[in-house]
Image 1 (cartoon, one colour):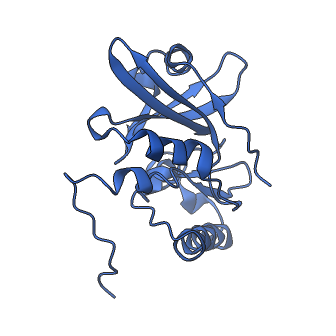
Image 2 (cartoon, rainbow, N blue to C red):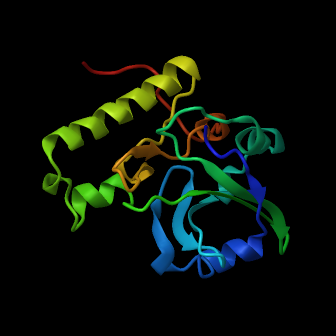
Image 3 (cartoon, rainbow, N blue to C red):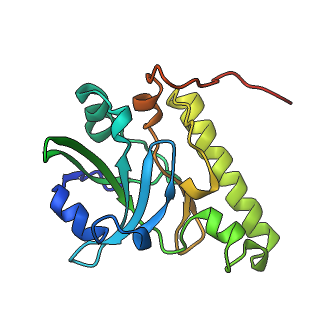
Length: 187
């Protein structure tokens, strides 16, 4: 079973982890916010998501993600910590997840360490595992991810893929300024 300890982390510690949210630590942007890679003082590596301020989730929605949603699947990135502070009159909401050693799938597809160097069987297993976790989210959890990209799928030492940001669509789906299509389109 996944490690369920989700701890509160101060905004100051998140600044330290991400080197004050430096461009060097920035992994990319998602529909949920800026994604950083960083390391705690104790050496633990993590992914940090600085949630978009203009799409501030309600207290209930944020608490649901932090305290209420625990996914029981080997292919889901585990939430490790969060921040919910007011700093200089601005709300700061951040989430952190485990950082996996082989990085994100987009870097394996488009980066220097191409997946084409791995056997077809391993690449096919990665695809199957991603399909299984999406099936689990949609059918068992009734959760539509809405942010699935190669940058949001991370690979561990054994090339096991883990999908990140699960449950965040429940925060952002209620945003009246955005239009989301939840119907299947195409073939």
